[in-house]
Image 1 (cartoon, rainbow, N blue to C red):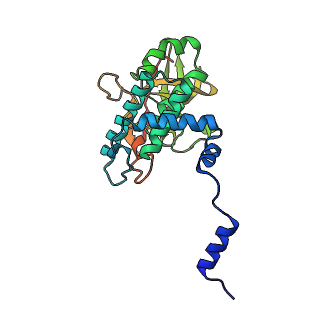
Image 2 (image 1 turned 45 degrees about the vertical axis):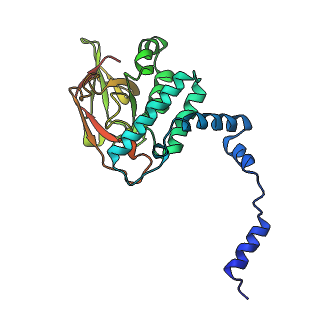
Image 3 (image 1 turned 180 degrees about the vertical axis):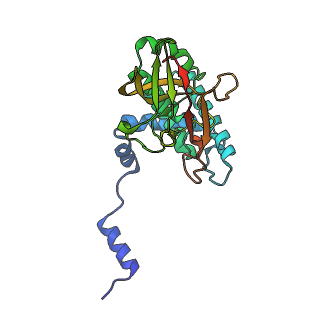
Length: 259
């Protein structure tokens, strides 16, 4: 005899009682009681400064309005980080919480998650010291440009080239084909003005493989793309948490850089 749906549900509840305390579940989610308490403390700090509207996920609003809201929230987060002297771990947690609150990825996500991490792990201590103030003050808003239209994350197949020009002591970056266009860099559309770009290093015709290069994309004063750099939008990711990321593509046409 077949059981009714209500009988099946009652049986499942008897064998799987929901007796796990909410706090214990949160400890499991965060990994430890200390991390849970940190999350609760920082979330309370942020929510104390938010209106009801700012704490909502509104997929029905326009992309422009979404971006205005998440940028305003990102500005608030950075202000709280400075005001309360949060260390790096707490600052990163507060940025994640801001995304939990709104349901949108902040336009500065790639700046913190990828751009600054690449600067810290790949470039020299002297370079990091020289660029630190510009990065920390957000004069430089960075993104991460690795993936290409024809290759995704297949590093060995990347086509973008960085040719060293010895008489100028500079590198000339170039996207030689349609498939070499840098595709999907988050924050590139409206936010980022500089990027860590992955390209094949060419010196006197010899290919030394893929290396990372710091490339200014836009004028810092006007936010206009620099000569040799063409930027375009890949389209709207409707009802996505990454809609506010302003994802674009860009092409390098013999753009010259020093790093």
